Length: 221
Figure 1 (tube, helix red, strand yellow):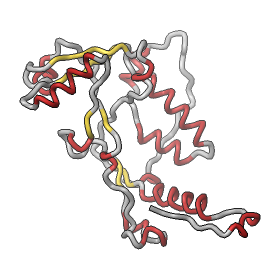
Figure 2 (spheres, helix red, strand yellow; figure 1 turned 120 degrees about the vertical axis):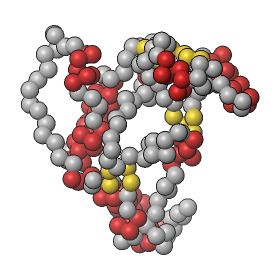
Figure 3 (cartoon, helix red, strand yellow; figure 1 turned 90 degrees about the vertical axis):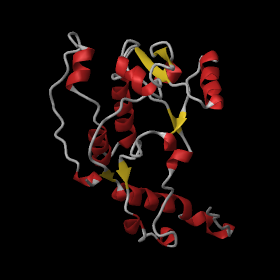
Figure 4 (tube, helix red, strand yellow; figure 1 turned 180 degrees about the vertical axis):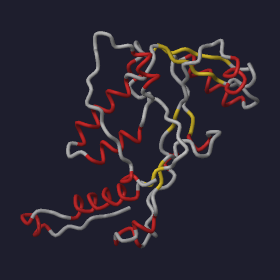
């Protein structure tokens, strides 16, 4: 599915704030990042819409979330996990080591469509594909400590431990925690990538007429 093919009808009915049931709302309105992308792609005020979308994602964060940790034969890794527990921190994993190879790969772009940009043509229209080298993730769950499947799948068959996190008190953690959306479709964001490349080239290379006599060059890496 292409990004520009995503279509939504935005409801006009307002929310009854006095009788607002957050749990029912979460169940009736699962997080939809496709709708968020549609809104960003069709608005002229992207900053305001982005900030609103971020505020909406905060409504999905429960007061308490749990993380199951596995302990294995990897002593070094075990020590790292236990050290984060001792330091009252949370262990983060490289996305490239996740069990599902399609995790964090809901979007893709077609390099052939980016070849039209001269500066990308020499690189076959490819940008950095493996962003997993630059960030880490940590999976949390609302399933409490009595969840047998969670112990079996994520705590090495009950050989690990479970930590609860107070999301209301830990603003630093909750502010960078986002609900997960499950989908069978990957989104083609070629048009968005092309638009961003064009903007980047304009911002970098187009200078005002007053600066034309400074005689400087740009270095690209």
